[in-house]
Length: 72
Image (cartoon, rainbow, N blue to C red; front, side, top):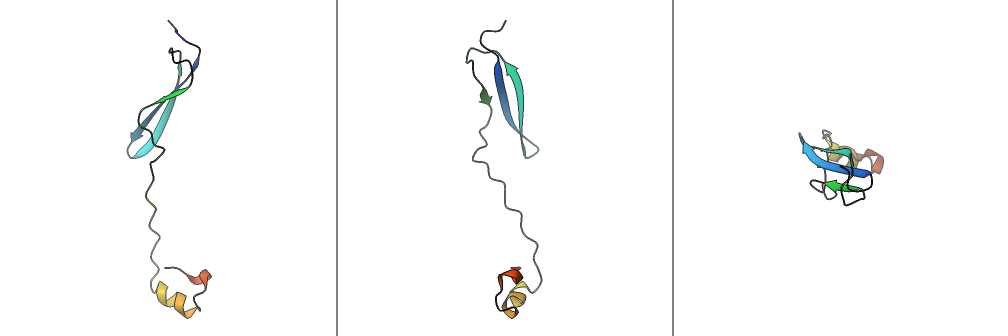
């Protein structure tokens, strides 16, 4: 039997290294939207490594250190 007003309950989880969130209808006594599970607000995905360009330093130096040719 419902005990509170209708609201949303979100459940956070990490599945195969990816953050997922499922939302369900809820009628608990809390009475407002709430989240269960790990808090991923501080989760940072690693920066993808940029592909290395052979001789990138030499290209940059030979172009007069132009930002458009900075492939380092």
